[in-house]
Length: 232
Image (cartoon, rainbow, N blue to C red; front, side, top):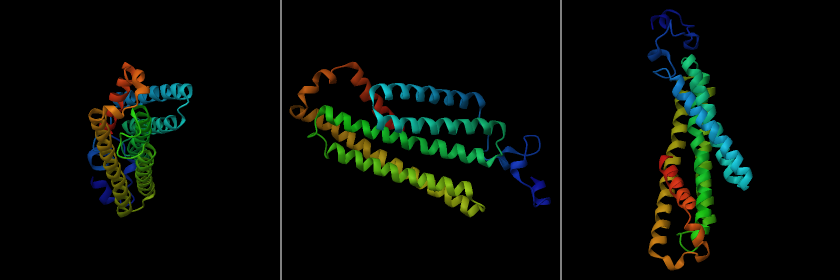
């Protein structure tokens, strides 16, 4: 917009939809929809309440913390997108949205990693290529590294005074996302190996868990975790 050249003190965050181009000065090149983001925010809010209820009832504390962290960050991210609907030029809302929706899945990944250890315990410790504890710790550490990178990138981006610092923060966040994708891919390979071992080594499956493994709820649980892993 010509005003920015004529006036060096021009600040895009002082823009309004009536005075500035969204594509040129907006933090996004579009205006996020209010209804769509409100729906996703409500879904994660309902999920958070459900996880809180069942987590306390079943005393699954580690899983509960991971799911609450993920749901809370997703809610914060979608609230920021709702605020961007009102003012897409605001950098603060953009950073909150970016951090919330990129870091949230790391907590969901941690919850899924914890579930794998329970699945291994049900089928038998001799089936996977590594011990359940080793697998869980390895992937949790990978998730932690991803979380640190994304958090550091978000912090640098939010405090950046120059385009160079802003780009550095974004690149660090991207590195965190890449490491998360890599660890999730490795996790899926471990799950595939476990499934193969279950199919080819039925004699090593824990016979004491037959009744549990035969229930529809357990099978639904397995397919649900597999689907969630693929989506992450």
